[in-house]
Image (tube, rainbow, N blue to C red):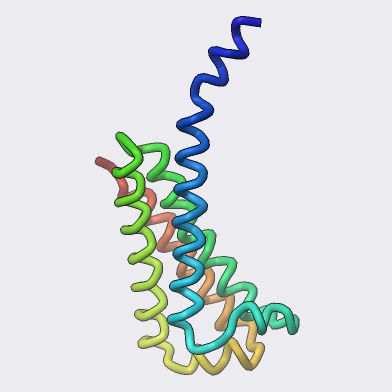
Length: 136
C-alpha cells in the first residue's frame, strides 16, 4: 500500500501541466478560428468534411509539439513558452498555405475535401517537425 502514496506524489504536477496544456489548447483553438475567414464549427455541424479535416489536422499539429514541450520542459514556464512557440508556428502555417493557395479559403467552406485535407496534413506535418526541432 505504500506504493500508492508514492505513485500519487506526482499528481499535483500532473494536474498543473494538464490544466496548462488544456488552457493552451483552448487558446490556440480560439485564436485559430478567429483568424480563419470561415466558421469551422458551424461548417462542421453542417457536415463539412473539408473543415473537419482542416481543423482536426491543425489541432493535432499543435498538440504534438505541445505534448513534446511537456516532456522536454525543465519547468512549467518553459513548457508554456514552447507551447506558445508551437501555437505561433501553426498560425504561420495557416498564413503561408493561404498565401500559396489563396483559393483554399473559399474551397474549405464550399466543402471541397482535398484542400481541407491538404491544410490539415500540412499543419500536422509541421507540428511533427516542430516537435522534433524542440531539442534543448
